[in-house]
Length: 123
Image (cartoon, rainbow, N blue to C red; front, side, top):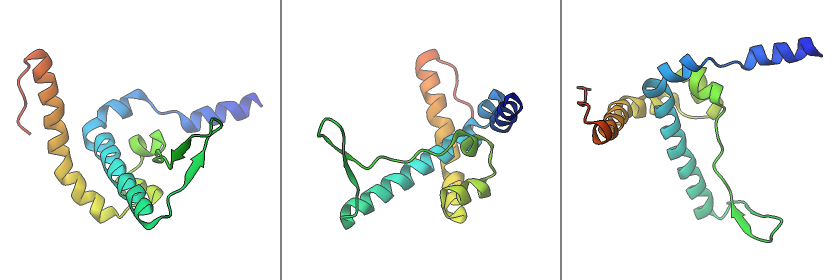
């Protein structure tokens, strides 16, 4: 049992450096694309009348919530694997990513500039 636990943790271990080094080129574009795609999906479901409403234990109706991709897919998978896992069109994601990376870098640098006065790098 201990050996099985050890194998599980080894297979799910995600070093922090993977997350830190891939922030602008991988994580943020993927997360933003996912949010846009899920919002569009939920909106289509609502317009088509196929959205799923769930009653919670208090009798309140909760609207269908956005799914969340696993962190290892956001941080560690190739773009092709990410799109395949999330059922996204790889070509459309590539186009989005090319446009999104400079905007994401700038918005982050702008926020830093507002707080610290540090210059904004050329993108």
